[in-house]
Length: 505
Image (cartoon, rainbow, N blue to C red; front, side):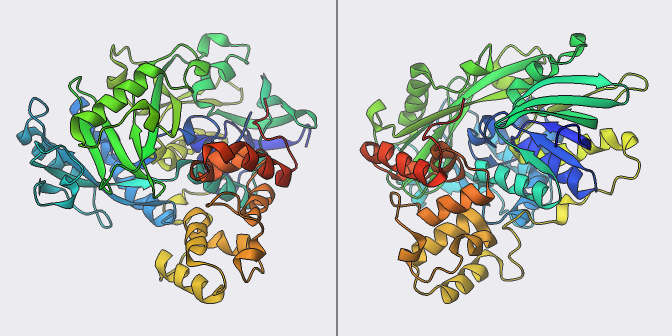
């Protein structure tokens, strides 16, 4: 691969980088993507796992962002219906928070900013009668409901990367870029791969490194154009399912922020997120005790079931690389994206990608390719809006029809196992199952939510190299393993992968 010429080199294997690589490859460009660690190893696996318009962004007058995101809910629901599905959100009304009239107006606008075909409309709730009121404190009598979508964020990145590879892109994980340099009308990109130094040439370069965008941009000699980012940490905690909390809840805080409480992995509740400014990416991937207390206190204001720090079974944080617009409060910084095109006369173009949301990754990719269109006049047209992601090609019967067909073809395998495989892999579940006719044919169970056959599939098809790749990103099987058994299960997974049980440095 050394010294090979590509049309486009992409740095960063999060949702934006994977989406750009897939879009470009589908338009006929020769593409290489470099990721320094694992795909979705940073912010893209540490989100609140929502495909949503961002109801609270209306308060900041970000109507274009909300409209675009709302429209994308419908597009992504059709592209990956196994990874994304509608979820009802409940807003309990509390004294001293946003007035009822303001909430009613905001939800009406949210319903109408983009066409809805698959997403129900909002409404008012009597929480003394609706089941959604059962887990709440008794003083919560009324509220509102609306719909957004839940998503498996890390698996969405994997699906985009698979899409890119199946369309001809080269995906290089564990290959950090160490140098970028313009040489006439080309870029020379040097990276350190597990087997040695790799150097490629590219006609254009996209820096989609997320929180490390400025660091990557700084590898080039013209450092006066290094983008300025606002790094904001968002922390989350996971607790056993709050009794009765089978809907999602939007909880209003006295500081003006909102916190989500989301049903998660069948038996858990995910609570997040925070907005804490940090100086470097390294500061942003560990939760703080203060943030955990903040989230527990937010839940305590609304839910009858008391929660304590000992109830936390998992915690994670991610860094949002936002556009630095000078806003004082981290929670008020725009979640919109900015694309900086840097191209000296006669030189190769560089696009720095700053900000963005997982919801709008497809539209962001289209925008990047539009900026690069003059460099690639023969490039094909936009195509991603109508194309299912790998695993999402269910046909007229949809997910339910495919699941039923799978139950008939694999009658000796438990419905729970088959249902889990469909939810994770969609129509690629057949690749995992292979010739298996019974649960025993899938190899030893690793905890209650993973089999050896899955681990081998993830190794052979989805770039999984470590136990963390498998247990905490491509699946959340680690959450379903008792803490006392996690080390042994990680060792088992590592042995199947033929690697160490920890992330590579």
